[in-house]
Length: 289
Ligand SMILES: [Zn+2]
Image (cartoon, rainbow, N blue to C red; front, side, top):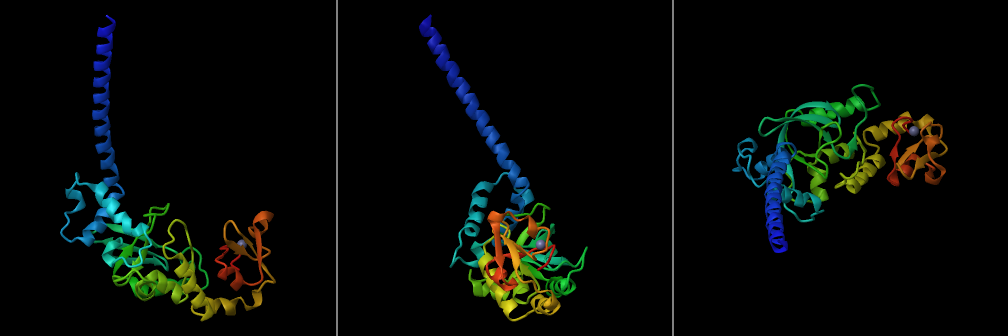
């Protein structure tokens, strides 16, 4: 009686185990179908760019997407000094419309349309509110990008909270993964170099963050674009000092309401705007120091 019970128990447990494993497998395969339909289509888009023969995303519901995404992510995650251009995540696209200095609309190879926000840069506002140099920045991006074939490089995050694609826009395909290449061929870098944009670093998308701060410093020292204008425009508005938060890495005019809210423990003071910028702080968008 006892023995029989033990056997039934074992057989019972075995069959339960088998059922669970089967269910587990089923679940796994359905859950791996999901990312393929949402995020991975873009990964496949990239892959397709890299290997022209790859079948279209829509026709291949059952491919080993996991292996591919893993592969596609690899080069982006590593800083990769000597990785070839094909190893990074590049998606070819055509710019169909320029929204403003740092936002464009593109058409991908398969006709899919996307709104793209350039990573790491911020041009003055030119749509809702007009900021100094906003129109110029927008016109510049239009003149350089509209109708042009470009290559998009992604960073750690594919999209921002508005669903826009986050990308570095290459005007020509980079041959090597070097700063010199980015300086010559990447539009995000060009905006900073020519003084049409300020650095705006949003982690975790920081692949070129230090390089961008360097380009901004050069543009500022050369008085290019908005930096030249800012010096003139703000000649009468120089403060005795600026307040900053070591947490938000933003700096303010001493009279700014946001500057006054900084907790004493995080409060940092800078003598000049240059000091704050060189320390990697970003100007407040409200008081515009
Ligand atoms: Zn402020």
